[in-house]
Image (tube, rainbow, N blue to C red; front, side, top):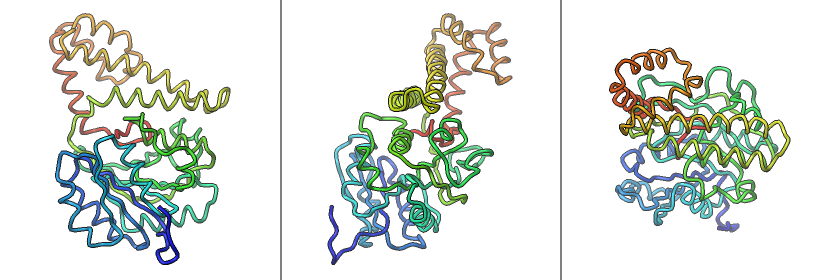
Length: 331
């Protein structure tokens, strides 16, 4: 959509996918209206949600900066693409409908992008809260120690990019937007393709967002997430053959192949294929260096029937301990 002289484009557009999070959406929009930078537009998109997103957003439509779109369900990538196509601002920020922005988020992101023409992404730290045993932060010790980061930094684990990040609309359009084929790891895929297009990440060293972990099963998405990661690594290998980034991506892809084998064996044990699947799981013990695994395998050697309920418990526990990262954040 083009702006006119009578209606100049805002500095930044905030895209708010709201599938299945109607109960949390008011808090997200409250955090948006509390921004110290007021020159923004927001597009809330409901792509066929099962809950009453329209009812949740209705009180906020009195704010002319907030618009609401409804579409049939096509996944989060398609929903974000549709919303961004309706936006007018040159900068795009992502705010999932169950997350929050701190009051200075937009001001900090706009300032970071304005100050650095080579930045393709501006990101920050965020608090992880909700269905977690202990609150934590997205950026871990040893990560994001400098103001800028590269694709190699991301692949090495030295850089973490929070889902609630900001990028340039022109760069987004140049790479074709979110890949609709990516049902999982779509955010990692976008960050990687922005890197491949050119530029670096600008990191603002402050907690400017709040990422909510909800009490839903992570296990049912885990294999899809891992395979999504593998697809992203394949894109890097194809785009930069023979490069350091391709070498790192190949190493990560091999690791993910091992994770697939482990998770498939775990699922088979839970489903009741105890003998065969446990033998398969034991072949991957090199990936399970935690002392708890050694104790579990010793116990299962004597009492194999304990393996299915223990592994089922592991999966349910992961649903409340998975923190967002560029590799494992579910879409």
